[in-house]
Image (cartoon, rainbow, N blue to C red; front, side):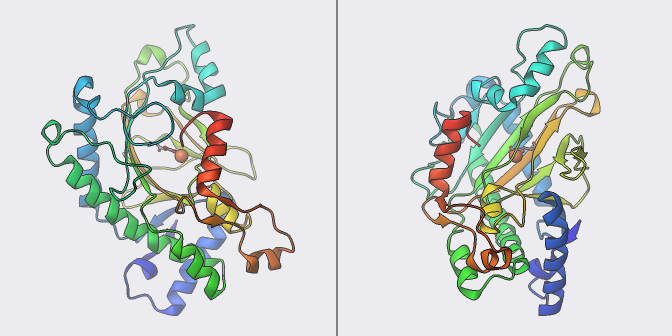
Length: 327
Ligand SMILES: O=C(O)CCC(=O)C(=O)O
Ligand SMILES: [Fe+2]
């Protein structure tokens, strides 16, 4: 756990910010993930977001399908129903294990999602439900998106501060994070029948890293999110804790930091007797055309550059071609 209130409160002096950043650097360096307190997002707003997500997923399928995620990677927006091919592909090996349990047909009904971005993003353009299907959905999720971006920018400040980058480097990294390429995802993992629960650690979302610079994650009380502990090779629970949001480093900040912060490998397993689970990830990538590269001051310290420059757009396309999934 890291307390980032010196960054979010607007009152943190240099010393308290420095301490918080050092704490972040020490803990985040281990597995690329930390729990964050003092993040500045009110519990009421988070509760409202979960209520909105539940209301959305409770709608009849034909209503949700009025904002369908298109085939292909762009835009990665709108509603994705359960059982899309890409979801199964993402869980790769772990689906086999799950399938083998009862020799049932491939289980596909385990996750549905809705992706939201900035209305100013013309490439990843939003796909909204007609207003009458869910009055207020667009307004609330847009407000929530920009509230989360404020916290994301404080976290970016803390990450940058913790790396002791030069002033020029700080400015160039910040300039790459306008917020218009972020992605708010509402996620629902339906409940799983007890007859299918022989292996309560069966997977809901296979192990992966995010492509973002970093990701914020809110989850309900059911648990299931796990991060890889790199030293032991074991997955450890990100225990749902009141007031805590989990932050994980993604592939882009791993590159920016020349690998100082590792991109966190994580997955979601079934817990809590297969109860339905809701979660809300918020991905914070750099703007798609900006060049992402290990910062020279860090490269000088490390004595080598661990990654070649790439834009987020190139990287996503490359990843998409390799694994055929969107995120
Ligand atoms: O549902 C979760 O807790 C994690 C979701 C996740 O890792 C993702 O969408 O990339
Ligand atoms: Fe993820």
